[in-house]
Structure formats: structure tokens, C-alpha cells
Length: 474
Image (cartoon, rainbow, N blue to C red; front, side, top):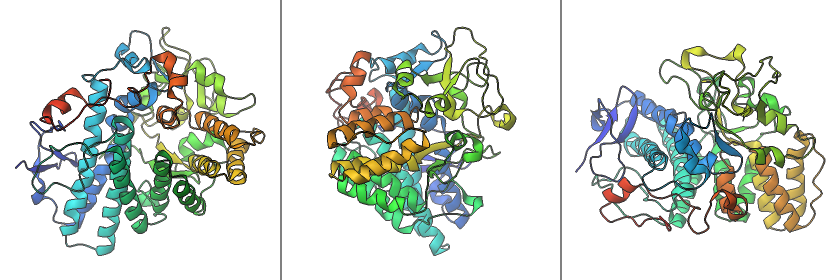
């Protein structure tokens, strides 16, 4: 039986695997059974799950490969010769051996295991019962988020509800439907326990609204429109509202504002550092590396008069509202970048690198409104759908939608998601779940029946000892 280890130095929890399908290794490990003894241990272990949210695997290159460049709103960026291997995601030529395919897989399993460490071990600790229940609920919501990432990218994956008692991590894949039901169970349980808000000292911890908001999105992917509608209605009744200023929404001053439903706290700290989420996308050789930039197709998707166009796309030669002249330091780089991750020079904390304080908005209230609109429309509730899409359009300084039929509204809502959530890693999975991938991504190389999912990494297939069946086409 393999032991489960806890890395005290990094507060990083993971499986010690030499031949398991989850190839995760680390230095300086301590047996977890000697760690989970105090309330402080429980807090540290839960913090380790949160630290993954800002990690390289979840917000840097691997995540941007699989969720970003595969869509039609983001391209590689930087200069043509820099990290040209990323082009494999733009043209769908990645393989079972690709580092990004493998890196995202490993990262998400590390995160699942961190959550399972808390879910399995914290109940045994003699500590404040209310706090104990809350920490377990936090872990369950976060585990649901990681499984949601896995099932959208790889399809059905093995379900581990806690740490396996026998230490066996080699088991067949569950079906996608089983994984989705497991996610629903986790989010429902978490929502019943989590508080609606926290004091300022705990900003970034997941909330009841976050669990219900993510649950409504999961139901949308499951095409359970009735539950998506009901659950998003619950969230809409919890006091969230759109930030009236789209630019303010994405600046540090707008963090954890009225629109924040699920947001990663990336505050620069001695313990966790910052995040490279903004750095990898910052203006090339001025603020950052210049990767994962907006496409011409995205620019063309905005209607005339939509303020989101210029507040989403940062351009060479412009002066921002905060007073920064945008001037790249690499003549071979492109001329457009993601403005949503821009941190003004006056606010940058160089101790953790450029943009390290930029929070990651995983779920915004605008998304909830559009989830509700889409679900309402599929249920034949045109009035609710029109009301909520118009709320999003009004903030963008656009007139009300002219769509009136169910079919026209469906198209309008999908279009609104494209421009509202541009470069927020929603476009590729949205195209897949709505059946539009071949239309928009076919010219890039997308093949129906294959590229809806990524391959299970080759080493994971080999280490499964025949327990895994590869996704079609790979």
C-alpha cells in the first residue's frame, strides 16, 4: 500500500506515486498521519487547496493551452518563435504525449488530492465543530471545481470520494454522467454549510453563493435547464449585482466587488507569493510575456458601441485610463493583449512579479445572469431570458436585444457569452457544449468526434495497467 504524504514546507498535499496513473512527486514529505492532529493543521491543509487555484497549472500555461488557445478568442501571442509548441493547441495537433495535456491533468489531480486530504482527515481532528464542517464544505466545493475542469477537458475520469482506504489509485474511468452527478453532490452538500460571506480577513474563501453559482453552471453543462434556472435564481436573490463600471471590475479596486461569485485571492504574500496569471499575458517585454492574446475574430465579434471591446483589448500605443502608455519591448510581438489582466504600473507589486496581485475571476454575476437567461430560454420563458441578457447589454452601453424567438434568443445569448466572458477561459468549452465547435473551430483544425475532448496523457494510460480506455481519435 502506498502512503499519502503531506509536504509541510509548501503545504502541498499529494500522492506519492511511482507507477500510479497520477504521476505526482515532491520533495521533503512528511507522513500525513503525523500532520492532521490540530485545528491549525486543518486550516493549513485547506489553505493548500486554495493555493493551487493561483498555481501555474491552474492559471498559467497548462490551463491557458487547454481552455484558452483552443477557442477562437485567444491565440498564442508573444512572438512567432517563442514557445511555438503552443500552436498545437491552436490547430488541434496536440497528442497524447504533449506536455500541456499532461501538465493540466497532473495539476488537477494534485488539487483533487489536496481536497481529499481535508475531506478524509479533518473529520478525525478534535476541533471546533462549526469550523470543521465549514472546512470540509470548502474542500468539497473546491473538489467539485477541479472535477468540473477534468470532465470538461478529458471526459469521464475516476471518482475518488476521499482517500482510498486501500491506497489504490489505479481504477477505471467513471462515465462523464457519473462525474457530473458527483460534482452536483459535492456542490449541494457544500452549499448547505458554507456561509454567504466572510470577514475581510477571509476574502477569497468559497461561499454559499459560489457553490450555488457553480452548481447552476454545472447544470447548464448537463442540459438540466430547469435546475440551472432554479439554482441561478437562488444566486440572483443573494445580493449580487453587476459592477456598473466594466473597467473597474477587472482592476485591483474592483476585486471581491458586488459581481464576485467565485474569485481567487492572488494577494502577494510571503507564504504563497503571487500569481503569474497576469504576467504571462501582460504586454510583451513591458509588463509580461505577451502570451494568450485576443484574436481578430474576437475583435470582430463586438457590436458597434460595445464598450467591452476597448476595455477587453489592450492595444500598442494606447494610453490606459490609469495613465500607462502601452509600448511593447519586442518588435516581433503582436499589438493586442488581454486588458482584463492588466495591472496599472502605479499598483504593481514587484515583490511577487508583474501583476501578481491580479485576482482570477472564476465566476462572475454576469455569467450567472447569462446562465439564467439561457436556461430560461430553453424552458420557453422568453421574458426572463430577455430581461437578463438586457441587464448585461445595458452595462455594455448597448440597446436591448432584438431577438424575440427561442432560436434567435439562443444565438443572442451565446453571442453575449462570447463577448462578455472573452478571454476568461470559457469560449472553448462553451462551443463544445452548445454544438458550435465545428462551425467556429473547424477552420482551425477541430475534428468532430475527436476534439471535443483532450486525450488522456500517454503516461497515465500506461500507468493505469489497462484500466483506462483512451478518448476517441487518439
